[in-house]
Image (cartoon, rainbow, N blue to C red; front, top):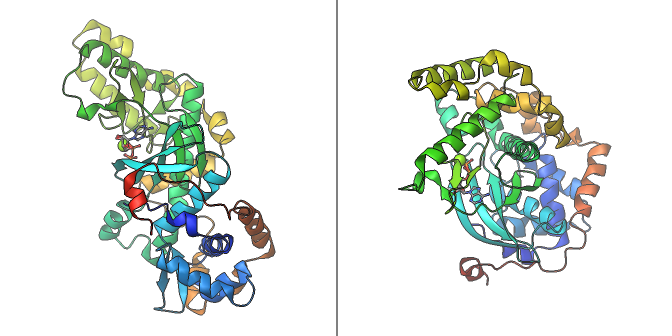
Length: 375
Ligand code: ADP
Ligand code: MG
């Protein structure tokens, strides 16, 4: 996906105010009625409508008038909100080339004022899974377009929280820098995904390192669930870094015993050499470690409730999205604009303060491709 961040240069404070208003309205509207956006943004002299047009032109919003005149955020619009917040926080100041396309994410290089290059992962939950799930049953119905906001945000928070906790416990993971909405900033890993490496200098050592990490994860009460050659990075010195923990579960999770039993079964298969016992964690012994990282995870805001929600989604069973009221959504045709209350407006003002002094254009131009898009 192309991320034309140069548009950011031309967006004003009012543009971001209206974009944020749409985001807020999407908490309980799939398509946010234009008049509700206008009320939340409260720009003078019908300014909201002019701004909406501009945001639409830059594809930050999608217009839907099938039931009533309304708008929703596009991925790009959500990207811009996250990027803007990060830039205002001073986390980075420029966006460069795309370095990875995952199943449900896009990864870009970003750089801060000092020229330090980092990786920005934009979670796109729903890009594939909603389509897949939808084909099986009408799982999320028309609610999907704001579910992806919530789920992508959860996925980013989960990744950030795990990365931080794992790093604190000495695991070889990228350095977790910051997280906002569906966006995670982490250190850039030098090297390549193991899947791209044709030959290793010391296969045995690499294998041992990898098995060692699995065992240590298990000792910490964790199972990666997606531990494969796509999510193991290796550099020229054959140093290993683990990335991407979307399905990681704690052994306190109700299905963990099943995951782990299959792991033990696999370990049993390779029981031919005497050393294998040393790398074979047993559910009974690692069960004690359950909940070990819970404190660290909730320190990043990823608490039990968030864990449960995303695990339910991974299992395909999250029927109702917290923070949304299904009744309200069903009645959306009548677009009950009274669903935004005073505390929401207060939150909105603090959200907007993040974009207060943004009349300065932001620097963005690490690569030619992005510059080309400027006009
Ligand atoms: P997904 O969850 O969609 O599978 P990943 O986190 O596995 O996404 O990232 C996809 C690809 O992006 C990786 O295979 C890797 O090539 C690249 N990538 C991801 N994170 C980093 C990073 N921190 N440093 C360098 N490359 C990265
Ligand atoms: Mg991956």
